[in-house]
Length: 329
Ligand SMILES: [Mg+2]
Image (cartoon, rainbow, N blue to C red; front, side, top):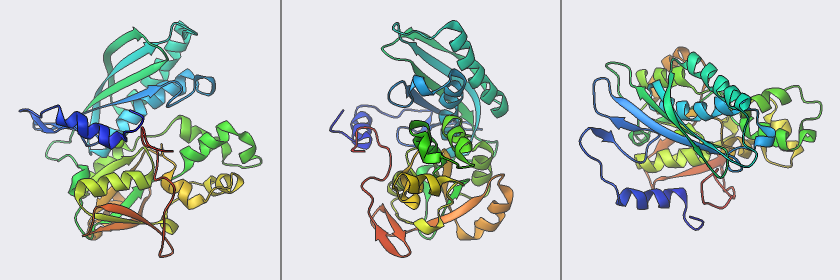
């Protein structure tokens, strides 16, 4: 896997699998879409100790929350609502979590499931080389609605992002090196955002109902996820870095670490906000309808599919766009 990016690997997998009757959208979006009225979506995410989290710095409650949240975020990105989650739990024999830790993990997951109207409905437990959670979620598109794919953006759509960016990346930097947040009032809030991201379920449904043409959740970094949306839609995306809604405290942490605040917001990853392409005329009503801020950060145009980052009109080329499995980072 080392020399393959996630995208190249997915292309290979796709070449060996076929989409059959009943599946409207297969591999390549935030979730698969199953035919039906209403249509259903299904998605799965992995959290693996040492890859996505470290047990030493993650409480079981936070881990349970996050394992479900990342899958719910993919459901949100389709404009759907979650119905059921099935949970694969891999337990290491070395340093095995205690029954109390496993209870705490499911307590964290259940609290988020309850708030999200979702049932933890099954799963499997196995021995594994490391603690891992594989959470699959089935969701439903609201009756009369339609799933929002990555591929629907039209030239001249505005790119908008929900909430704020950079908090999760800054929070992780603070967990790794608390000195970066010395005296910073927002330090705990940033760490909490990293540990317990809030999937934008209501915002996703409102964006779908309000005319979003394409949507993706910001899991691996705004710039990389914008690239994915642009490539799927066959459009050229531009992100204006000075417009990014950085979460309070992000700039201070970035500066303390010698990083550029806008690039931390653009490439940090794990924000679990939504990036949507929206016709310009739909923007005012959407900004009223959403329960979180919706900020225009760029647009898409006809052109070679890709993403350009501009800082005050000057193109910036960061070393990496975000977190990609198997890629340089
Ligand atoms: Mg996603």
